[in-house]
Image (cartoon, rainbow, N blue to C red; front, side):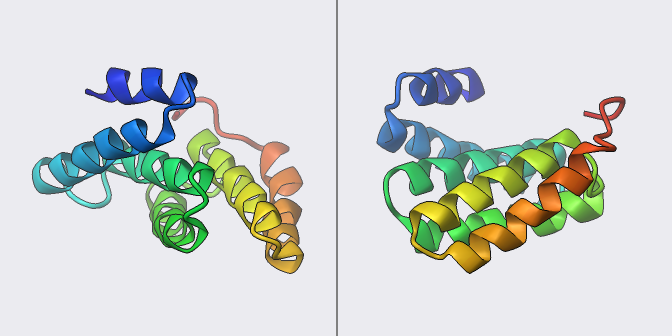
Amino acid sequence: MQGLAQTLLEQNKYHDAGKHHRELLGSYRNVLGNKNPKTLKAMSGLAFCLYREGEYSEAASYFDEALASMSDELGPKHVDTVDTLGKMADLYSDWGKPEEAKKYRDLIPVQLKNVDTENN
C-alpha cells in the first residue's frame, strides 16, 4: 500500500494519497508502534498530503509529531528528519508564516552538513 500512496503522490493526487497514508499510519501505529521509522514516514507522508491540499493546521500538527519523534528515534541529522524540516519550512512559508518558516529553514543548513546517510 505504501507504493500506491507514493505513486499517487507522484501523480499529484494528494487527496487519494492522503487516504492511503492515513490507512498506513493507522496500521503501522497498531502493529509497529508510534516510534517506528515506517510509522514516522507514513505520518510525514500524510502531513505532506494535507499540506499540499491546503490543510495547513492539520499538516503542521502531523509534521510536528513526526519531527519530534524522528529527532528522538532517528536523530536530528537523519535524512528523514532533515527532509521533514524542509517540508515544514515550505508549509509555513506557503501558510504565510515567514517567522515559523525561517525557524525551520535556519535548522536545515546545519543539519545538511552532517546528514546521517548510513542509517537512513
